[in-house]
Image 1: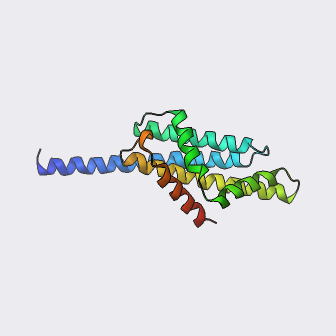
Image 2 (image 1 turned 180 degrees about the vertical axis):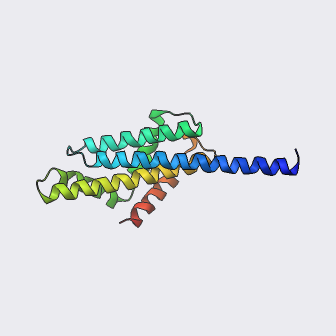
Image 3 (image 1 turned 90 degrees about the vertical axis):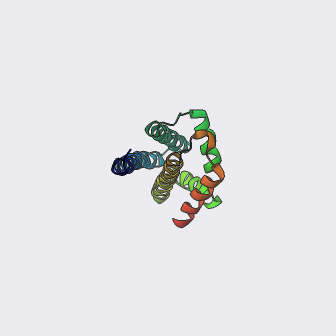
Length: 160
């Protein structure tokens, strides 16, 4: 292989990586919108189930894009570990938003907006964390849930 051939191969790999990342970001954006939609469901608990299902589907799509074997049970465990340890205010905000949705008038609006925003932010952040993980050569068997939980918590604190 000549130097020119090596440079061309490197340029092609960088271009392919950029295209792959763009496709991954589009997947995350699409699922974040769906997550927001589930966040405004007027049925408490159904919203959380919808958001969780959306995040699982998003990770399945990212796994497929990056050629990483997917396991729904592993992803459920991973998400439970990541989201379950997020800053207490974020969990409280989600619970309060869900409770507000059951109140007529202003409580309903506050609950819808709060949960929609919270679910969108969490889904985008989780998606971006998985993109970084998959791009670094990781798969579902070696996810550092502690690091992801910390990153999610930090991102949620910024938006507080």
